[in-house]
Length: 143
Image (tube, rainbow, N blue to C red; front, side, top):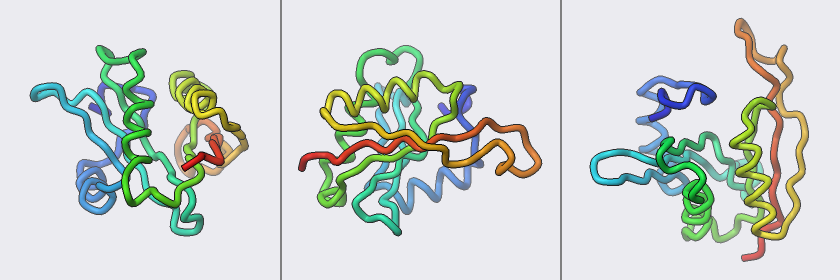
């Protein structure tokens, strides 16, 4: 599914297997029949246990614009493992308008702020052309 969304960084199959094995409580996969139509990978930040960091969000083209990504984030936040989570963070490149819209809209729906700051500059990515990544910090969420 990640391959079908060019704006996302493709990682190795091994990294996705590890992710699903060790971070399943903070990730979600949505299937329709035998087809995967949604995926979010996330984790509780070990240095900030009140923060759910969203690593990747993928929604099949056929499902976009229907609120699936927001529902997936909510489904993770409603889990026991996230009972102490007050913030959601993600990094988003300036050209990734769908993710910017998702996180700004999520903050608006929760009636909380969405603070944006630079996380990684272009020069921080060794040996590759990569856009700057900005941190979107949403919260504090009301539990």
